[in-house]
Amino acid sequence: MRFWPSLFLAGCMCAMAAGSNAHALKGLADASAQSDSCATSKNVKPRIDKIEPPNWFAGLPSPMLLLRGEGLNCAQLTVTGKGVKLTRTQVSTNGHWAFLWVDTTGAASQTLKLAASNSGVSIQRNYALAARNSSPTAHQGFSPADVLYLIMTDRFARAGSADPPGDDRAAPRGWHGGNLAGIAEHLAYLKQLGVTTVWTTPVASNGDMPEAYHGYAATDLYAVDSHFGTLDDYRHLSDELHAHGMKLVIDLVPNHVGVQHPWVKDPPAPEWFHGTLQHHPSAQHDFNQLIDPHAPPEAWRNIVDGWFTDAMPDLNQSNPLVSQYLIENALWWVETANLDGIRFDTFPYVDRSFWHDLNATLHSVYPHLTEVGEVFDRDPEVTSYFAGGEAHQGIDTELYTPFDFPVFFTLRDVLVHGKPMTELDDVLRHDSLYPHPEHLVPFIGNHDTTRFITDANGSTAKLKLALGLLATLRGTPQIYSGDEIGMTGGADPDNRHDFPGGWDGDPHDAFTQAGRSPQEQDVFDWTSRMLALRATHRTLEGGMEQNLFADQDGFVFVRTLEAGGCAAQGNSQAVDSRVLIVVNDSENAKSLAIPMDGTALAGCSAFTPLAPGAAVSAGVDGGTLHVDEPPQSMSVYEVR
Image 1: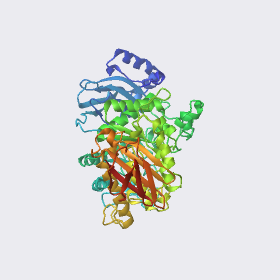
Image 2 (image 1 turned 90 degrees about the vertical axis):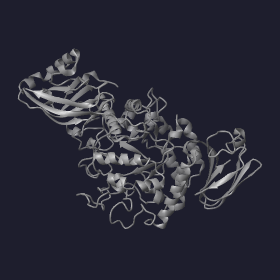
Image 3 (image 1 turned 45 degrees about the horizontal axis):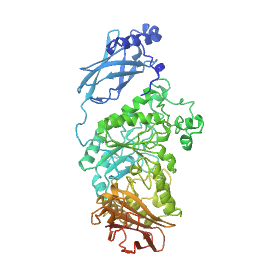
Image 4 (image 1 turned 90 degrees about the horizontal axis):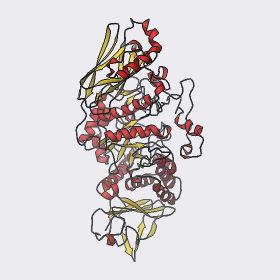
């Protein structure tokens, strides 16, 4: 962690309980600037309104607590407990905020006592130092063996018949009433589809922020938004997912908060934000400036320091107080809700140093936890710059993987906008830029993009090709809820319709086969069978990818556990070692002749069609594979 010594100006307090004479003397010296004020305010009664984090866990890194209240600048702050000590304090000039560094190294779970005292008045609060989750299967992380499913909680399903006050399902940007319990009620549907991991949009409270159903304008980073339920509801969802053999990924937003957060008008410390509500820079979005070694500093500063919108104040992660607060917040959520992974919003808008500190801490505490970052850019040079495993500008973000936005854009181009399939081959060639391209998370749409089928002018055939490629390309596929039934939608907020059947009284219920339209069932059946195929073939979950052929509308590739051909490995009868995928996006049938020598198909002779792909036979003649692929279709073969 990095520290700014000039910021550590403690308020008027006694730090003798800090356990160190040096720290106590420093606290008294730093307090001198406010001693006169406190001398005339001996009767000010201290008040503690809130403590963040609301509890902590024995065995996690020692916490920095943030207290909110009144009169804290003229109070003696103490923390008592067995094996713990208060090592440092810092209080805001107005006495509304106090930072307490508490050393819990080696301490057992217990209830600590926090106190703020002044002139005989002492306010005490119990503070839980809880036991950590000891399960060996906790915090598993997601991997290419998983299928991520993105849910906008407000738009998926509601448990309970009564609509909350203020909800209006007719308002495109209003609250519609979906909640965490509604997700928990439909896990059987997700299992049937083939989902293994659920990623929900942020659950943190957005308070009274208007049109904040999406969750990205937090006003309390330690509370579940009441529209979605309670912390217990979130824990219950986590428990139910794990009971079903599934995982949970949280969406965290270290870049910014909502404009109604109490910090905006009353920051806990100087330089808490980049600018103020009245005077602040606006975020720029040219990420090329971040990767360009010749760009002037002002160019990248406008990206990482600018406010994403005027309603989303930009946090200053270069301030060590902000950085430590956000790192602890991530640790708290992972431990509290037994999470398996994290999705980080607006990744390029935050300084690399912070990402390194955050991810390094997470990995030291949770070795199997994995994270995916949003880098909304079609250029692999840009997205790979943020992947962990390689230092740029001397700093490794240690991010498990970014989303595969380049493949997202390219799939739209080749399947919808008439670009040649060679462009997909080309973007995949840029996998060489990533330390771990197999970790990438490809997708065909999310809550910030138009629905694929709408972009494809309603073509179910093209949607199925996109979903089929998603299930068979390298990486961890991510599906946006509703794409598996062909939900339509244009730009935000039209791409965020309610999932049909998620509310009592919906005209049809797409959670059940009987309730789906023929088109919805067609797409669902294709998607679930492709995901089942993926789950039963190890090579689709973790094998390497060899791209064998690409032209205007054809693409052929093989997923394999072995780089050499069948004969070279001497195990041509091995089950599940090679899967061949043939894609034809043309409106006409396509005859393909694929040379096999020198590829993972060399010496292979048996090509067995696998459902749900087209039941097309493939023949071998003189080291060449011959396939006649039907129009706008995809064939999958088990190869031996």
